[in-house]
Image (cartoon, rainbow, N blue to C red; front, top):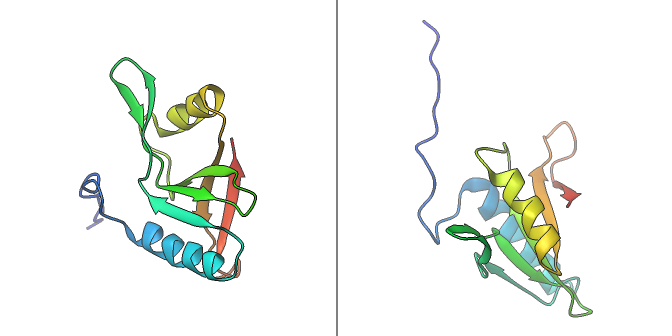
Length: 114
């Protein structure tokens, strides 16, 4: 019998999945090393259109004061990719998708900028 594993749905606001937990630990190391100044989980929400909002997983401040929005993804679902693209066109922030590398690829994270 072939079993399928299904996600239990979206996490409640303020809760982190395993990828977000791992990335937050990574951000904390970057902060301690002085490579970023600050970060906040679900720290901002952007209004994209009437009844359409986008909340990136992390808002990050670089040492020069520049702000970035980081979205942790293992798989893009629903309209998530459209929302991050629209947000990148509407707001003066760098939007970055964060993916976990496999053990074969040396662990860590890779990014895609929008």
